[in-house]
Image (cartoon, rainbow, N blue to C red; front, side):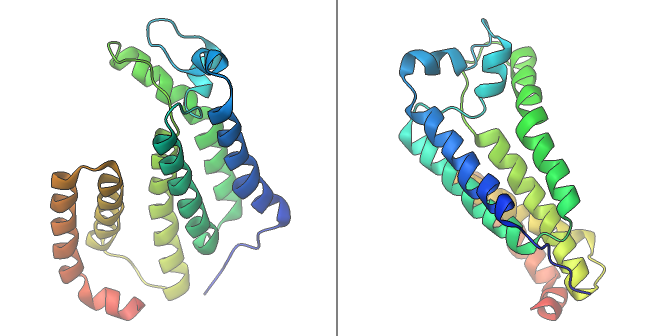
Amino acid sequence: MNRHVKWRYHDYILFFLAIPLLLTILYFIPNAVKELLILDVKNYSILNIFFSNFVHSNLQHFLGNLAVYLITMFLIFRLETDKKLFYVIMSLLFIVFPFLNSLFIIYTLPSLPPIQGFSAIGSGLLGYFLYVVCGYLRNSYDKTLKSSFITLLLMLNFSIMLFYRGEILYFILTFVIGAILTYNNRVQIANIV
């Protein structure tokens, strides 16, 4: 049973135009305005609790987060099998999660310097992408996935994030674990491929 989501123009406009455009606008706003949107854990407001998750001051940070977002969203659009769930998760990630992320930082890491960036939401998308891949494989190949196969996907997901962040030692560790899990799941992988 192979079920793919039928995406409409408004889906593409929202996720591939509107959100990247919002991030771009927030990157290019004047620094005086941007300072109001960056989360200061000692002087926070409802405005910077939310918008700190979308604003960037560093071009490399902005472009890296934008690239991760666009690539991950493209892959989700290719593999998603449940549009309703997708919109529920996206609503949580883009509306609720910024508040939770900032409040977590305020109450657990009160000595951090000002916080900004789309990395937490990007990480949430990567986590959801893992769920989408599992759903796609179940629906497309009607297979029961072993927990070690799902762990393999998680390790590959972690290794991509760690490589992106420049955490080479942790990347090597997760890559080696992923290689072991790949070997242990070689029959299941061969059946899928």
